[in-house]
Length: 117
Image (cartoon, rainbow, N blue to C red; front, side):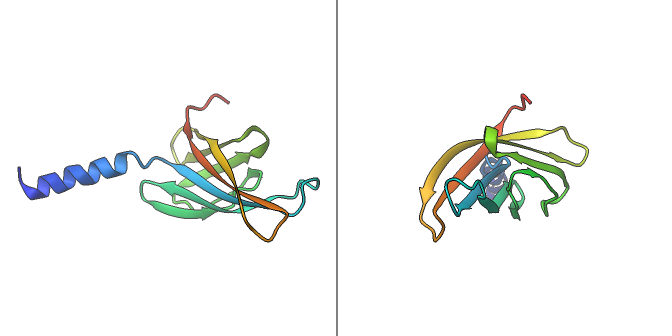
């Protein structure tokens, strides 16, 4: 087997598992006020990592060709759409407490899931 072919196969295998996903760092100034800030988020694609605002609601992002991005914290889900593609969805898979200067903070991991909403 030629080295160039082997390198190409290994590179393809390395990127096939890197589907769209997101990591969010959230800061909450108080337990009762509901004013958590999730602007510190990273959206990962097969082509790079991009900072996004993952606060509740829909907004534009700087992810290339992404035309829709919405987060629903109450239901632990999000959806997004790239230009000329169907809607794709994420669900919060984990949430762990982190230390910070706010009342409480957490880091959540969001992974792809089949859209059912």
